[in-house]
Image 1 (tube, rainbow, N blue to C red):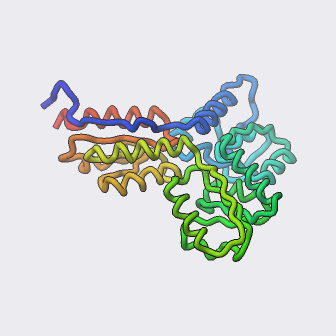
Image 2 (image 1 turned 120 degrees about the vertical axis):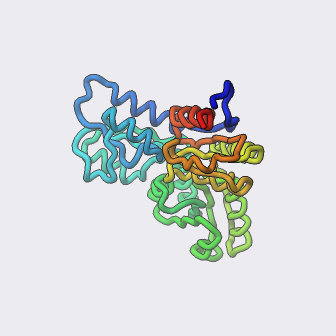
Image 3 (image 1 turned 30 degrees about the vertical axis):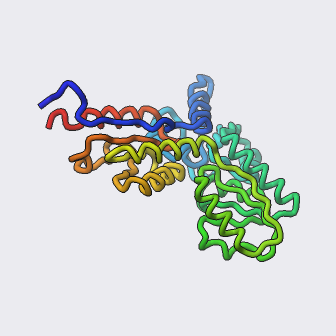
Length: 290
């Protein structure tokens, strides 16, 4: 029986969805693709953001996603928000590509910081995920670097070294704190720590945790390969076991909604508004025809 009001109450996190860096990358791509005189292909070296729905939308507009320079002919190379190593940038220039750099300003800052740390004689340590494109780009900025994701990786650190420590921008303050505490209990001659965390990512984490404590079920929307979205889901799950990480409404097993009255929704920094709005619309209407 249809009611006049939604069956499911839906609450949105105060801060969620596109961050400024992602928004800039998307708008930059749209501007390039909209240029009427551009007949040469426009390439993104890797997915422009970790969201398959948005990547597919831009593909329909003409943005070609490739895994390596070898797959690219002449044209425009769009550097995604995660950035690339300087050597890769030089290779693109040597190949004659027109380069449009949409690297997030905070990632650029991180790249410059590790270069300065190495120049100052520190052994660079990055707290982050070794296979993440942001980290790979930062690793390519220096000649000698150690990447540590968890405390299990700390045996890779040099003994009695002068350690210059930075962090992948989307890590949580809690994880950074735990890792610094563990490193501090080890063997070193000097530690220099520079905070490279993204404030936008922290705001999303804080508002997601605050919301998930007040709802029956929590949904975290975003790409399954998105590091910042996975982190949101992990943090929410610590406070609400009924937390689900989904890319869109089509992935939802509707049975998890049975018996739930209040749902919370947040989204990663690479999740477009239209995905969030579609999910919320369906969620608010769930059960009206049951």
